[in-house]
Image 1 (cartoon, rainbow, N blue to C red):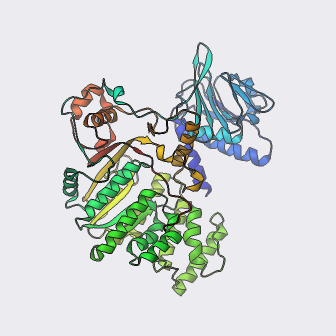
Image 2 (cartoon, rainbow, N blue to C red):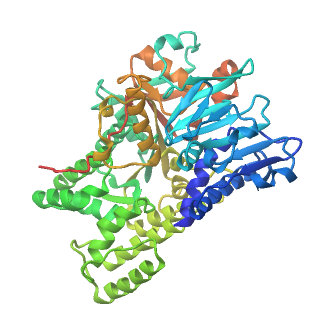
Image 3 (cartoon, rainbow, N blue to C red):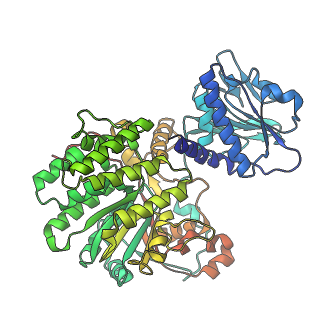
Length: 594
């Protein structure tokens, strides 16, 4: 588990390091301080060392890490102060433009900062002094969860919430309240954007404003697109309700061809048996009970449940053409896997069993119980809960625990889960995959030492080799109105970034920094040139759901530079833009079907 925690810290650090200055001249001296209490100091120093190592690895502010008591014996022309204000006897001594009072409150840029969850990134005017600090150890660590370096100062309050950004103006640090996210451009904002005739051809995907059906022309194109193929890999930008609905409409349309045999989701492998049991159980009452009691905790997304319900209806009506489910990811949310899958199964063999996945003896005991279950051929509460299935879940759970290289190790597990544990689903018919756009590239990028999902299916796996097509669904503008007043503590958690996003929006709404029903971009920096052109095409056609039919890259590159031609849309066989839609809503924790 420690390896995975270290990995997460490095991922968070990467966000900050990406904007830090390069190095020339003398080395940088990174200075850490001293917290009271041995445990607190150990935790702080471990984090500071990890952050320092990450920056060194990525060529930012190359130097050495020292304790502040060593400063008298090292050069101090270029310093990086790293640690909470409590770790330094007098943090102002370093020339930082801040004042700390007896309550550990900080005055910076004319603002009094009092919340102990405040994090601060700060650099001096001539960029020879940098500080990563905060009003508490937690606040200090929070500053590594947001991009820093482009502005002279970034102030956070809790993970992912940027309160202020600042620049040096006439030798004074001027702070301004940070916007929540960049707004989706209005038509007026794009009026001067030149779109040559024929340079970008699009067609509507939706037959109505509610996006409840596909246009006949898109349906015809879609069926021709998958004809003769074995895999349609649907790559997505996550957390967009329009993208989720689009995938559901695609599945619904392709089911009618009779060729679809399986649908794969980018969720825990261990969910596979539960999803399949629900979509194939012939008794409605039993299926509803199963959903309420056992499946519910394993389906966080409302969009995923909608697809499962649709597949169940199809399977009941077409028993000779049943569609199965494959889940292929690692075991994220270990506590949920233990509570919902591991504990109930082994509880049959040992009353009151609870898996302690953080301790080595817990894993050893699990191996012993598994051997007993295999010997007795123990079947769980449902027929798919066999010793072999549980063994594959435990294997995947262990590999999740041992991840060191996030991409390489994760992809090794995904390919195993996809082609070995779920290999039978890939033997015939058309298979649909729904996963992030990163997973949907069907050519292995140069220099990568591992295979992504679609690339492995297209380049290596014999049943699907050379018969993979990719469709990327790009969501641009997100509206938060539906979740503006949602109590997040009463809904399923999602990825860390999603949870932060929703909490940050609600705080920004309370502060008056956002509008409830406006559309925003989830990534900072605004739209690139090509996305802006598609947004303009959307306004001109009065459509928010557009398939890119053709692009004159040469004409657009002449107008907007190489950045247009380098757009990621060229990495996929087809792309659909969903210009304005809602943020996906996670399902309620307290769920009753009827």
